[in-house]
Image (cartoon, rainbow, N blue to C red; front, side, top):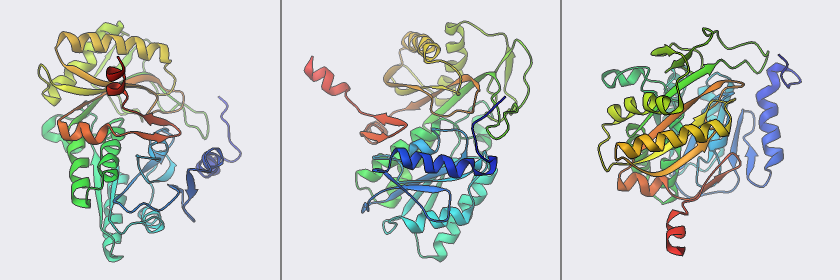
Length: 340
């Protein structure tokens, strides 16, 4: 199939240039690296995120007002280098320290940990938090083996809220880790996506099956089956999350319904309705539902569902207003209740 590009090796650079051209009031390029930053100096702990390109809005769309202050991109589906991360940190205001948030992938872990060490040599306080929300990939006893997928958004949102509230570095790091511990995701793949450089399929799937827990790069899931009804799919997704997060009656959660790239909003809201009915049956309270495309791959069919278990502290920092060109959060629930 055809894809839009001039030269495949330039796609990430040209994506960043196009993003800034569309939002020149908000972003600037970090010189000599594939990174952008929110314009203006902010005297607070800074939040950095980043990883391989190709899964937008993760990571590019997590940067903006009340969200991450900067994003450093790798090549397509590849981690950014430690030197690129360091160069990005040195470009932004870093006197209050940096909290870096990314997914739990080998390349990202190695490069972000090295970036922390490089920052130490430069006299910069930096911490790295790795999100491990894909509960299908390993059980809780082996949580270090879990991948980071759509829960990355939740952790960035909570950490950025804590930083915007003026918390010091240790506290912002603590909130980020608490958010990472409180979040879980289950994904279902309907059909594979394609490589944006070539249009070639990312991997192969059996015909007439969907796969629960399959990774975005085709890592094996936990179950292959024929496509179930929306109600059955909701139960198949939620029950493992309820068990893993030890949700009980009257717990309050954030529910994130994510399309993997080619699933329509019509279908996502059908699933969302089934998810809400199942949670109501289990007497688990949904404080906020967010529905859309947050962690994707080009042309991929499927969904993922992320649950964050709120306590009062996480709820306070997560629910601060934020804006990026790809993602906006405004906590208007209280206003509407007051108006009513």
